[in-house]
Image (cartoon, rainbow, N blue to C red; front, side, top):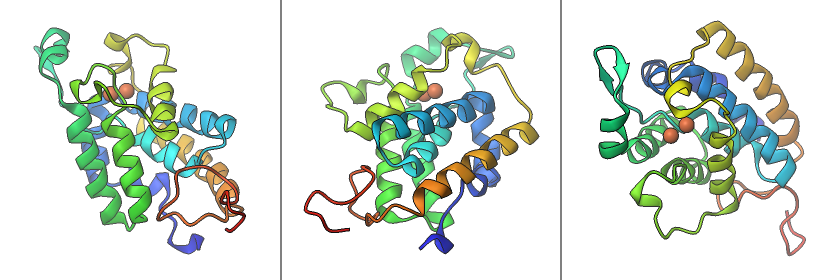
Length: 193
Ligand SMILES: [Fe+2]
Ligand SMILES: [Fe+2]
């Protein structure tokens, strides 16, 4: 089962991720993936889906730059990064051979990760979508800062490799079928695996 597993390292080293993740901030992407892992453990949700959605949640960002700075007034008014991110992440995941069910769940969690997006109005989040929403918020740096603070790619790669090992350990014991999984870890409620 795990020979087909798509790792965070596979995702973060892809040219699409290398191009787009730094716009929202590589540090913010990695720390959100780390928080998503922690929340996945605490809430008994799939850490594989959680960390991938955490890592890629801001891949839809555009550089809202005005003379080298983010233009937050313009960003808050016109931004649709959740929509672009959901589509961009889905394309990347499918390209890497990710399970179709996981690709769907990761993409939808990205679509609904931000309260500032009008698309999230009147939407009841699933536990996984709420997890990614919360993981994003756990980055304590303010909005204006968190997209500008950076770590270098070597550090980002080391940190996602560490997460890959932790995810793998948990994933190999999971008996659920990914295709129609609702993100909960363990046996299905009817006792089947
Ligand atoms: Fe975001
Ligand atoms: Fe974010």
